[in-house]
Image 1 (cartoon, one colour):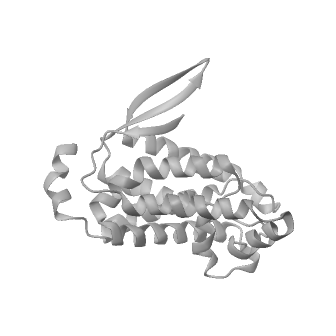
Image 2 (image 1 turned 180 degrees about the vertical axis):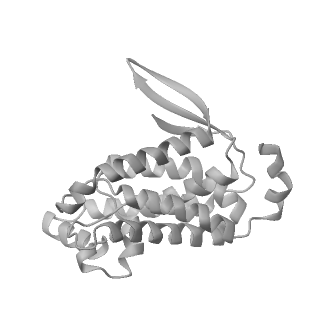
Length: 221
C-alpha cells in the first residue's frame, strides 16, 4: 500500500517541495541521456560509495535514482508529507532540514557497511526525515492509502499508524539485510531510511516552527 493523500491542510505553497521534486526529476532525466559507460561513471562520481567516501556525496547522492519506480515512489512520498513539514518550518529552514536528514540517512547506511563498493543513491533517506517530523507534528492527520488486492482500493488511516508501521518494516527488513551488506550485495538501503527518520524526529525539535503552527497545533489532537 502507498500513500496518495493526507487530510492535513497546508497554509503556504510548498515551493521547496516542488523544487526538490523538479530537481530530482531533472537529474534522473539527464542520467537517462548518458551512454552506459558515462552513466556508470556518473553514478560512481555522485552516488555514495562507502569504500570511496567523500563528503559531497552525502548530498549529491540524494538527487539520484536507480529507475522510474524508485523516482516516482520517492516523489509521491515527498509530495504527500513534505508540504506540511515545509509549511510549519518555512521554506529556508525546510530545505536545510531536508538536506541534513538526507546526509544523516546516508551516514547511517555508510556506518553499517563502510567497506561497500556498491553506490547508494536516492532521496528516500531525506524523505524519511520528513516522515519522522510528520509523525511528531501531525500524528492524527489522516493518510489515504491505495492498495491492490484483486481490485484497487483505498483505506484511510491515522498518520501515526501508517508511519510507525513503515518504520517497523524498515527495522525488520534492515536487520534481515545485514547478510547482504556483509556480502557486498546491493539492495534497498534500509538503514538510510532508519537514520533519516530518526534524524527528522530529532531535528524537528531543534528547528523552531512558525508561530501560526503553534497556535493551531492543538486542533490536530
